Length: 486
Ligand SMILES: *Cc1c(COP(=O)(O)O)cnc(C)c1O
Image (tube, rainbow, N blue to C red; front, side, top):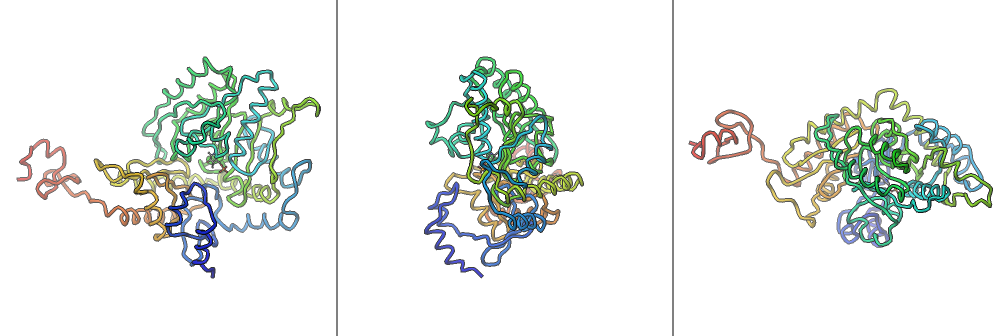
């Protein structure tokens, strides 16, 4: 067994973790994941945890899946890496072809890279290059949507808008503008609130005067993950597509998070028959096994970059591990398995159960302000209760809950005071029940058992209100006045 205290020390002494205030990280208990199987992870002391975060939204078929392992091993025994710069290899050829065949519209070209930020960065650069080649070099502005997250490189930070995360670097950003996000609240297949008009009319007004300076619009379809699973009303994406077509700008869909089954289908955009100019993929593409990303590109953009070497139309971009063979081999197997999971109806059943379980356990829970869920994505927004003050930032309440959840065998990840729930696609009904039960127990432990509603002494309806030590609901109180306890 691993020497956990030694690992703790090495980690504290040398590691710098992403998105972490290291002073805080070093003061919290550490957790070293040693192995995994299915939806479970084990730490170096042998404790198990349900991976409710799919190892940062990447995992599709669970950890240590025999089929995916076999695909990796088979490729490993041939070659681990061979450059894609001027050479090709069978795994990339086969995966690229299958991916393009599945993709909508004329997205017939794939440009491989190794993470989501790069997949977006490639689309942005190609869009800009395309407009230059068309004799419209003034088209360099990027439109993004408020709250969008497209990665942490300079270009993708500008396309996104993640407030505190990226604000510091804004002086270095390329030219961008952001339109307001729509409003939507969806849970368990039911759209409870939706407003797209403010957002769409702002975008339309902007394009009416500015479109000639704009290269492209980039958006996360249906769910803005990193913003806290913020949702879009039905039909919204289709309207955005129409506006892009009407004003002649490129549409870049960032499906880094929402593709590969996350919302129930291989690609999300097909749910509204949207055909983007660029489709950016990463995270689930390689089942959460190894880094891989792809930018799918439509024919006319590819064709615009064709010409003699001296024509200066070449796309000068590449990464050392572009189209890594192990990544492509595991992605190919993942794609095959995913098609079965979708066509068998199994994924739809899991999503339905997930939505019902979350609605049943957390909708109207005294410590839950709201819960959004679509596909296998959910955000549970916590608060101290109706009428109570919000927690201060220093309280780090989301983190307190997630740290406590480890003792209840859950790996959970917060965003502010929300819990973001993104399980592997193969989570079972029993595991969903386990997850809900353990989150409830954790909330009881950290926030105290919530007050339980008891029947009103007059009408019997459940209430939290008390008058002189007796339960009296609001309507009865209003009807009977202050003397109602007598
Ligand atoms: C994670 C994510 C990215 C960035 O991907 P990396 O692999 O972390 O660079 C971009 N867009 C969306 C929607 C994401 O969720």
